[in-house]
Image 1 (cartoon, rainbow, N blue to C red):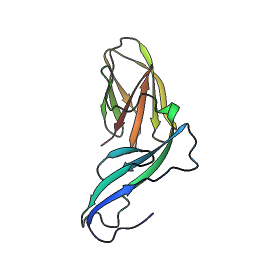
Image 2: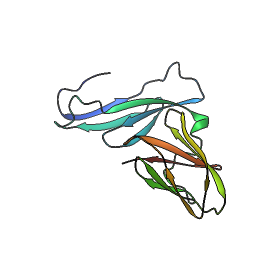
Image 3: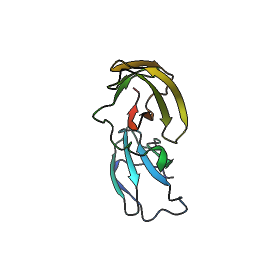
Length: 148
């Protein structure tokens, strides 16, 4: 790691990724902007630093098994949407049946799984950390979301 002591314009450049299994992706999370970048060789990520963030721990690396995040690149699909907070999620899904909902942390750990009754939407009481990225899965559809 490194600490920036002066504000300015910077770039993070990836030359190569070594010792990463092929079934894993490397994700750089900009915690300040809430952006996520899938790193590949030759990735270049420009960023700005002002006085308020000098010395902060802005970036985090995550190593994620690709099978966990298949089809989770989009934040919203046509049939699945999530809104909520740290203790409750409202999931919109066009079903009137019971569906199994799974929620994963970005590192692939399953933190919630339950059979939920739907009528176009369902309200789920769940305990989540704020400003974290999660993946919700229903049937073969997934969506990434963060809590506020």
